[in-house]
Length: 306
Image 1: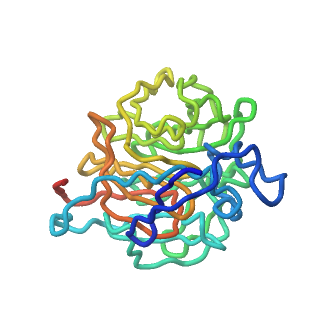
Image 2: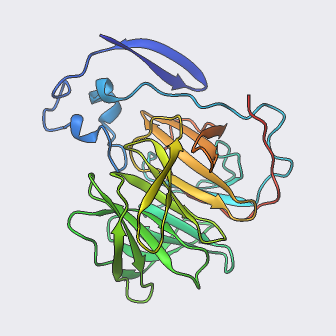
Image 3: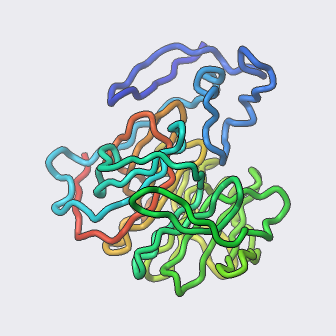
């Protein structure tokens, strides 16, 4: 038997879970070991069937109460992949746990990015692989060209650009290696830039200067990424154990990188990232959510950390 910690509604519960086994109890077709690090959304049965494979939750340092941002941000957007059906939520940065609206939506995506110049929210639909735009009020997806050109069994994990007049970049992974692509937004054709040297780069984000970063959930670390070659350089560990589809994005007005860090079983921590060390600091803890997200520009913010 092994002790594990689970965060439930802000409390830490320490309990005893079964030791690792080759298969979960229940349906043997449900392969828990194969999902120990997965770029897909968490299956609805995973938390029940695969308890022994859910890592101990690593709670991040939290921004002190009363030192949350001096100015609440402009609207930010997050697609809840854990809801049935999905919900498309709007919140004021950094209050990811308190959305102001959450209409249901039929589209599914692991790749969202907001064009701050035009106000357009772009997405790659996960089922159809269509590139398109999202209505920021209703969450309705309007499809454009189908994305083609993925290498082998690569699955799309992220979308990033400075603005719509710049290069669109797509990250993808086959579970053992991640690749960076450029995307032709007219035709949907991807061009393979190169391998990253990281197994599961779950999302990418790019700042106003054109510097790209990524979050790998196999190593639970932040990387800088060379957009000319795709090569990723390790910065450091986030301090959290992440699994399944999730997101990072820049507040391009302040240069702060944020991450929706999902650990499984509904445990989600919305965090700022130290670009020098990779360390994450929780600024909000949405309960029972798994998010793909996108941010818009906001006013200057400041936090202090215990």
